Image (cartoon, rainbow, N blue to C red):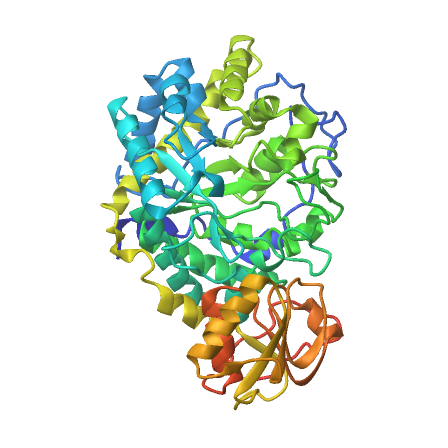
Length: 560
């Protein structure tokens, strides 16, 4: 078992029942929020310059420096991180808490040299090939070492699988998270995460912004959809915990997101500030459950989203709310690890404060890692100004910088990264996961669903091309006079055919008519279409169950 598997120790004897019985009162006010106290609170809110208390990491008494803290790093690693921060200049500390985005496809070495950033995030527009991104990451690690950094650089990426994968081939294309929810097997999730994490480490990544721990609320969820494992908190929790074990196996730091839950708000925080009208008590029974269980399992970092939770800190994005971070996440859920903001260039926070100011407010609220500000230099300057004026206590910055460094020191436990031979080597794992998740909603559960000739309708061009390729490999003829396989491109779309297949969320199946079968595929990867053809030809049996409630479809499994 890898050394870093100790991260997934039990943080405390704290059961889900205890979580659900916690008080809904929120007593700590954010320096970045409105003066109005949170619902149920009688405490006045401090001003923006009021110091926010830091949560000093603690652990169960062990008597040894090598014992793990509840969030992963050892006592020795935490102490070493504090020593490193104590020797830093304020400019270095201000940079250490920033994980910067960058433009172009060359290594952004200037961000390290000028602003001492703690890391970078790689987006799709930064990638031209796996070899290119591996070279860029290697150059970044080399530059960090040349500056005397004795801890790994934080290089992160959104690589969830399905619709969110920044690095494409030759990496394995993994299914959507809802596919894993339909498979209902945390071991499948573990295998997928392990394989994905190994591929990312082979490219030089040290952190992955996954898994998606959101509980989707159904058709009213416009942003998360099939990125979520499902609509049942217990199911999502099970799959998330499986994924976390897999990432730990692979030796990469995972960051579950988007606390306090993006699956039940009707807006996209990339475009505006979503408003969550559910009470905190309701959230504790739904959205917060997977995050609470991740904390219980010893997760090292969590991402906080830009969501206005009216019952906690009305009008304030959670990412800059001390009421949400300090009181709910740290105080009530007991999280002691690194708090990562969602991207600070997003409209959900930047429109209200500006990206640089949002970074300062996030630090004041208790966040530790400022992800992707619009301009890293501006955020760096804003932090220095806040320090100089006394608005931001230096102890708060020291605590945030130490958490980031402690994570990276602990990352060294993972040992050497695997060779590039792992790239694309998990196709069988991906295909098996797709088949396990494929769900026959109506029609025969076994045997062929089509004849020797099929006609493909609907979907996107790539969908039709991929299904055509998979069908022909299986000996089917694709033409104009075969059994009609209708592809529903979007989760809300509907249609008719001999076989109707939902490629995203399955809600449109209830409004679709099929003479033979209705199938939820949850994705459009090559492995998903290979699994679909196996079921269409009777070679295999779809083993999935709907992970979300679909109005108009039975709640009980169609195929057991």
